[in-house]
Image 1 (cartoon, helix red, strand yellow):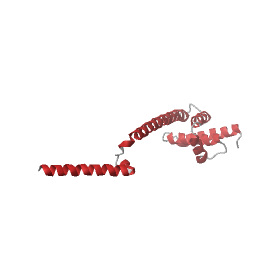
Image 2 (spheres, rainbow, N blue to C red):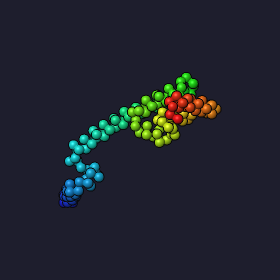
Image 3 (cartoon, one colour):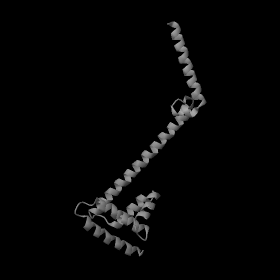
Image 4 (tube, rainbow, N blue to C red):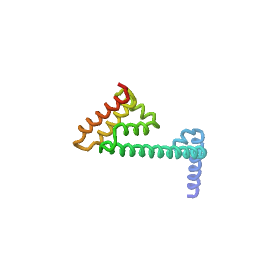
Length: 157
């Protein structure tokens, strides 16, 4: 019985040793099974970098949520008639100025001769999507009339 245990222990030791040699000779295999313990400093660096990226993404997400909340608030004021299309458009332009991708998307998505007109059309679209039932047509006519006044004042057409 003791001989069998020694034989099993030797086999187990040999198997572990062979596995370690195999993992050492093939680092990609070791990495894929999570056994590359000699890379702990690198893994720690990667973890810190990932945490930093996560913090950055969280901060960007917070900023996006803040801008959305501001836009929702000022569009509510526009729908209620307490502010004008020109004022809300100016705020949207200010909020979008820090995000060049937003400005590019607005330029590509909305018709108009100027960025001001395209941004105003973005505001109109945003407002109409949030208009209460039964107010969509009246709000659309009102905002389109305000847009025409904005265009006339700017002399862009």
